[in-house]
Length: 239
Image (cartoon, rainbow, N blue to C red; front, top):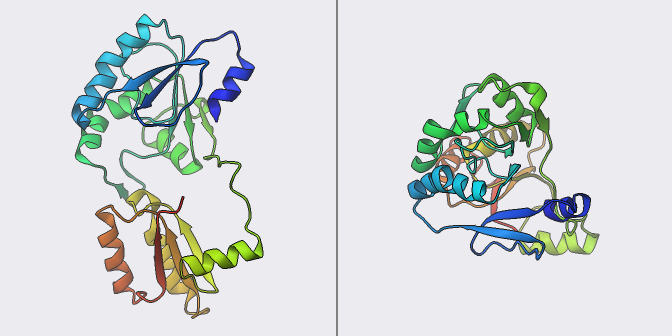
């Protein structure tokens, strides 16, 4: 949704889109660069070593990335990057990542972000990490929460009832949205449910998101430990 706005407001500029094959990014007005299908470690090297050469040849004057993994450290043009995740630990919480992301974080992650002209954090929590954890100047950080597509709208009563039946949802529940990953902090919602049920015994927690991460097993263990097996429902990913 960002590209049409930029094309409308800045018709004198040329735009190039960096995308993976299979991504649905349609625009006849922009050139496309496809990230090659490589193993994770080689992809990191491509981003850091090959992509800067390509952008230099295209005489790129501004680099905007919606994913902070795509930050070439050695590219010295102005860079604006969206940051939605945390490297390692912050405020006593651990945010583990796959091995290739840990390698990227160690060699390039923090240093690459420090070379950016501006950062856009998706929450105040992420901004706090950038300022306190990376010592990035807070006056160069904007907080812009994730947007949502116009197709999302409040359900009618009939739609709400249909979805309740489709996913087997109870009449009263708390909804927690997000894939089951450490950074989503479902543990707090589950622990809070234990407290809330002391006053409202019929309340349930519904977690909507993918459960394919190894972290799912730790979440299930916490649910069992707190005796909430019958009070937490996982719907899986919902489009």
